[in-house]
Image (cartoon, rainbow, N blue to C red; front, side, top):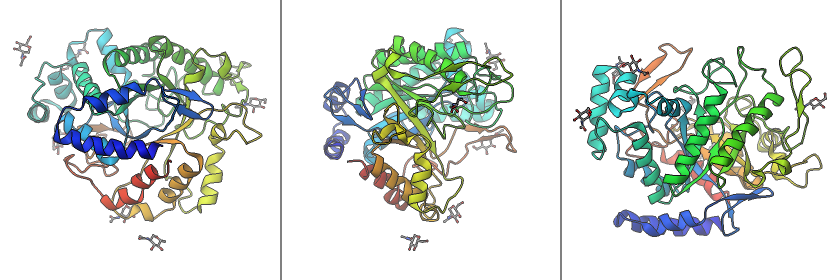
Length: 435
Ligand SMILES: *[C@@H]1O[C@H](CO)[C@@H](O)[C@H](O)[C@H]1NC(C)=O
Ligand SMILES: *[C@@H]1O[C@H](CO)[C@@H](O)[C@H](O)[C@H]1NC(C)=O
Ligand SMILES: *[C@@H]1O[C@H](CO)[C@@H](O)[C@H](O)[C@H]1NC(C)=O
Ligand SMILES: *[C@@H]1O[C@H](CO)[C@@H](O)[C@H](O)[C@H]1NC(C)=O
Ligand SMILES: *[C@@H]1O[C@H](CO)[C@@H](O)[C@H](O)[C@H]1NC(C)=O
Ligand SMILES: *[C@@H]1O[C@H](CO)[C@@H](O)[C@H](O)[C@H]1NC(C)=O
């Protein structure tokens, strides 16, 4: 079914490339919304199973606009999605962007955003490159106007928009104790976060016809100075944030991520008691994530990340059984330990696109097997061939401008595929693994 959609989508999109306006694709995509959940599946408005087949397009770093606009027009970047056979995007944003809207901060223009991030000399140069590639903008265009242009073009080309709250303060995610990791940490103000999520959900619903869903927070992780790091605290804030999103847009799917950089979420499908931490403010507190009691019970999706950082030569049976334990019980009603069923999305996976890595470990191959076996949506990390800049606490130098992204699907200049053989052996097989 998805395959059928995908093939006709490709045919339509090649016509669309010839004739730039494509109202039929855009209308058809929007008419399958809203999505909701039914047991282990995401279904569209016709009741058909839908899988997100996506890559990430970051927009959460310092400049707070989607990456790549100094190399390519928004229209040409978006055109890569149908070319890759992707039906959706995970578009990442920072809460700081919405805080600036609320405070009416004068630094929201393109000119100020770029120069504040890159300095006067490089900033002026990159600004003129952005304006050359995207002449519909000028230096006074605001970040939000740029996001609107991106959201409208994605909708126009029939690409579903999943908005992911990646960070609070706008810079590269994620490091230990970087201030963005856990509720109440240095930059992670819980009230501003909920306000920002609700604002974005409402704005996207009102302006971008293919907007489908929101990820509440990317890669929650331990923090030394923050609220207690435990599942009870997770429950309290995640359900409050989901309420805020659901009020702002009752149609949106809501993605819940797990702990430790979103590497596990099994306590939720297993229906475990969610405990506080002895000796802290959450001591003795407990909760249970019981979907039937939540207003948005048919909108809940679980998300999990998987990178190739350990046990890189596991055979696929071992790989799959270890990973299954981290939360895939959610999509397996036959597992006697599963208490609550939810759809699951692999919302980040990826590796260096250098032509050989895909076959140096078992990761790429086993991931394909996992998707084939469990039929879950996925979102590759990532589209960008390079970044405006990247600040990574703990690295020397901490900030690099014009950094190459060797994991990106596109090359440095965003005008070609970085590694066709890698795509043949990973992204395209991940796509074909969904039937
Ligand atoms: C705007 O940016 C300038 C630096 O160019 C900074 O000094 C100023 O504090 C910023 N204003 C606000 C309200 O953040
Ligand atoms: C940008 O805004 C400034 C101040 O309002 C104005 O003087 C200038 O003409 C504007 N430039 C463009 C290109 O719109
Ligand atoms: C919470 O504590 C109970 C009792 O010790 C335990 O059975 C349960 O597994 C704990 N929950 C989690 C998510 O670890
Ligand atoms: C690709 O990256 C891997 C991991 O860093 C490395 O071992 C391998 O030599 C690289 N391949 C090429 C062609 O550079
Ligand atoms: C992939 O790696 C395996 C084992 O290292 C090797 O046998 C196989 O020939 C490689 N395949 C390709 C296409 O390079
Ligand atoms: C300015 O940009 C160039 C090219 O992207 C980069 O090599 C250089 O380090 C940048 N300057 C600063 C101060 O970061």
